[in-house]
Amino acid sequence: MIVGRSLRRVLCSFDFLMLYVSWVFATTALFVPLVYLPAFALNHGASVVAASALLSLLGGMSAVVPLAVNEVSRTGSAEFGTTG
Image (cartoon, rainbow, N blue to C red; front, side, top):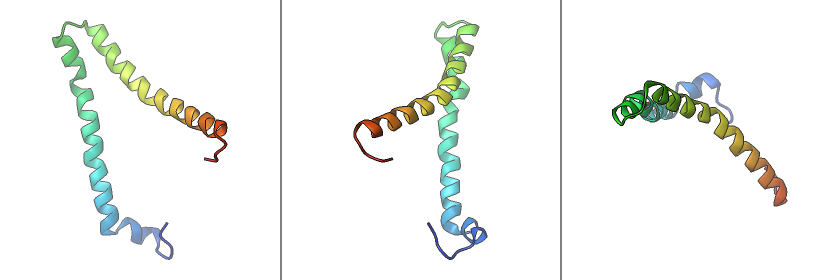
């Protein structure tokens, strides 16, 4: 944590700007495959409904997996007697 600096000063700093720009590029790269996934599935013999379902399944998993990881991490911490 940065102590003694205003939020405006931190948000306008070069370090924060570089961090922000790097995450824009990183998350853009994460979502590019989603654009081409239905066309890829269609080209490999899947039906239109199956290609759409594949994209829906992938989107749904992006919501379910973090919840599952959170639950596993909480129960794992309790079992081993660590705090977290």
